[in-house]
Length: 140
Image 1 (cartoon, rainbow, N blue to C red):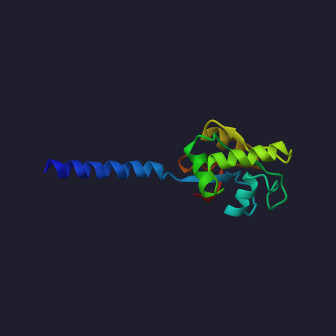
Image 2: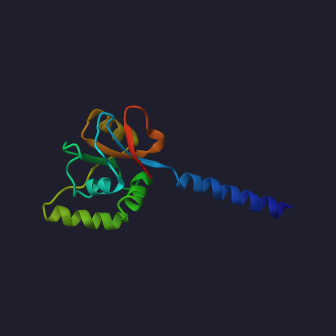
Image 3: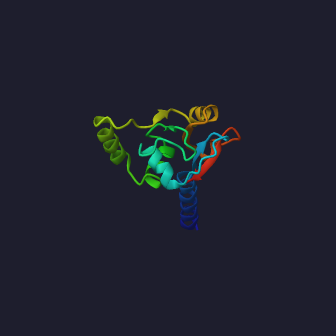
């Protein structure tokens, strides 16, 4: 009986751990931003291949620090790149003078505040941090 209990306890702890790993993240913009944004367009923005929103406004891409779970998930799911692949990509872009990587902030609140205060900014945060000061354009 004790072995069965331990197995059940182990299974429950695995499920609870998996839930935290599967936390949802989002891409946000200012609520007044009326641009059409899909996963492909967002990837182009974060890879420096597109510098303007669909409405013609210049875009400023920002995110949380590289080591954050949100950023790592974004790199993997939206950009289809590992952190090392992305670092290599940006090294080449910087070396050739063709661009700079998105500015990084320490916390979701910092990213959210920047997006809420600037209509031309796009950011990546944990879905739990979303409030009515920003608009979600992609969940991943």
